[in-house]
Image (cartoon, rainbow, N blue to C red; front, side):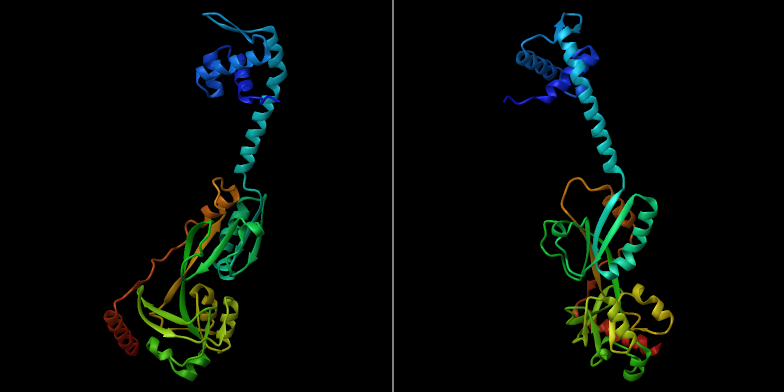
Amino acid sequence: MKTIEWKDWEIFCRVVEAGSFTQGAELAEVPKSSASAAIARLETQLGFRLFERTTRRVRVTQQGQSLYERIAPHFVALREISTEAASVSERVSGTLRIATPYEVGSQHLAPSLSRLLALHPDLNVDIDVTWDQPDMLKHGYDLAFVMTNTTLHDSSLASKRVVLVERAFYAAPALIQRYGLPRTPGDLAGWPTIGNAGDRRWEFLREGVEIATLPVAPRIRTHNAEIRRKAAIAGIGVARLSPNFVEEQVREGLLVRLLPACSSSPLKVYVLMPARKLMPASVRALLDLMEGMLQPAAPRRAPAGAAARREAGAAGEDAAA
């Protein structure tokens, strides 16, 4: 069966509507030569003339008019369907499926999602809490947030860093009373610790510059920041946590920030999405809302001598305070 060139039929309809090859070609968005060739192909295929041509005008034949009246409504319907489909693709609706670590969801994602849902009442959101980089295609996620202190795994996914999560050191007042208030990072040697999964060493930064590291063997290792926070409140050990995550507990006196002039290496939060050219409107709307997140500068490492001098200076400042 011979392939039907539907573009030729669209051009035919446009020429009939315009009453001109030149204007019909413009409506069909093709060169005039292409329009003439399309009509010639149709006439050869059908075995009769579709237009009477003179040097002054083009007039559709009776057979051509009959064909036009039968086929034109179908192209009108196709254009309406195309316009409607484009409109739907721009409307923020349907269900947005997201995977995220707990901390990212509670601290950074929840406010943006609340605003997104308020702006778009036809949108629903499904959220799965996970600390691992998920198989997005297998589980059907539109977006996945991943938190890491290194780099992302090799992936065919599109990725974008959306925020850096500051980290600092916290302990319960009872633990501080037992071990004494630390003045330098080295004073924490021998303290019980509560760590993230995979923690083997903690970095200490002052004004973005690393001044010391401390080997750790946490009594509890977990990705779950809620467990780490509760264990720290119970006095199990010193924990490395996001200041935003423990703000209320610090205000209530349940936790104390140790070495307040120091922070630790931040966690990088990336958003992953399937690598595709056409981004769903719901995904684009959420990323636009999150665009204004604060992104602190990446930490710098100081030379060994400078690190020692800075640590010594920090100890003196803390002791004098």
